[in-house]
Image (cartoon, rainbow, N blue to C red):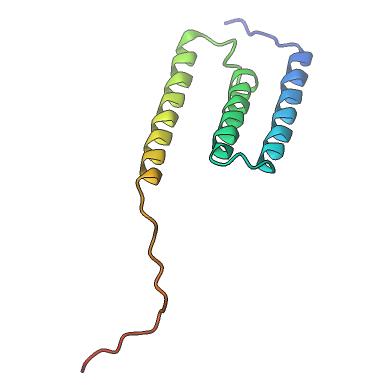
Length: 107
């Protein structure tokens, strides 16, 4: 199987994009977006992960079977996040007792 050679400028462009996206993540962390802070952070993280998988793991130039396995991995990650968000969104506020004084046991 012939290997695909990627020019160095592509790697430098992807690296620059990752640095810019990291700075964007830090910038968004200091801006109060309310409930959209997590959405923005996850969106940027998904873009960064996609760049790493496509270029640094050479999936972009791989065969279709590799794409199927990568897509399956992302599908299971999506299922995990959906179940996680479903669990977190249905929890009640935890009760914290006002006093931790020990109970006396009747002898």
